[in-house]
Length: 283
Ligand code: PAF
Image (cartoon, rainbow, N blue to C red):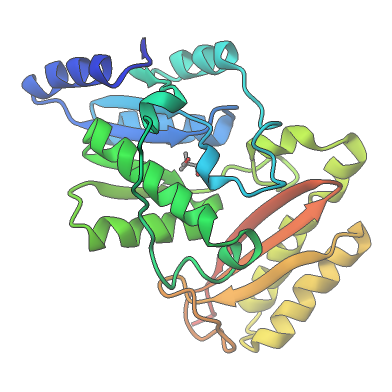
C-alpha cells in the first residue's frame, strides 16, 4: 500500500494506474476505520482494480458544538487496517491541501439536504460533505465512489450532486455493517460507555420492529412509527427524528405501499447516532 499526503503524489500514482487501464474505486472516510469501512474497501477491490481510501476529518461538515475536536484520530491504526484490507493507495491530505488559503467555493444541493440530518445539523453540514466529496472526486477521478447505506441521506445527496454536475463517477452504496446485536457500525460508537452501548441498540430495535410490522402487512405509517417508538422505549432512548420518507425524494411518506426509508437519529449519552432501513411492503 502506498500512503500519500499530497495531491501531486496522489495524481502521479494514479496516472500510472490509468496508463495501465486499471479502474479505480474511491472510499472516502474520516478515519477511525471499522468493519463498515473495510467492507467498502473489499467491495472497491471487487468492482475496481485499485482501491483508494482517503482519510480526512473534514472540518466544514461539523457544526459548532459538534465533535470535530474529539473525533477519533489514529493514523497508525487506520493505516494498518487499510493495508490489511488490500488498499492500494491511502490518501491522507492535510487541511491545507484540501482547503488552501483563499478557498471560497461551496457545493450545495438544495431540497434533499433540508429534512432529517439537514434539519438537525443545519445546511452547512451537507454543504461541507458535498464540497469535500466533490474535491476528493476531482483529486482522484475514480470510476466508482463507494459509500455506506448507514448514511443514507448523505449517499442520496451525493448521488444528486453527481447527476446534477454530470460527474462521470458511478456511486455504489453498500449495505450497513452491524454488530451482533444490530447496532450499526460507526466511528462514533467508540464514544459510548458500556451502559450507553447497551442503550444504543434501541435504534436497531425500532427499525426491526417497523420492519416486522410492515412484513406482517401493516402499511399505515403512523402505526408503523408507533410500533418503532414503542420498541425504543425500554432503552430510555428518545429519537431526534424517526421518519418515513421516499428513498428518492426524501419527502414524508404516510402509507407504506412502496419501498420506504425509515430513518432514525438519537442521542445516547452525548453521542449522536443514526440508522435506517428500507421497508418493503408485503406484495
Ligand atoms: O461519511 C463520511 O465519513 C464523511 O461524511 C465523508 C463522506 C468521508 C466526507 O467527509
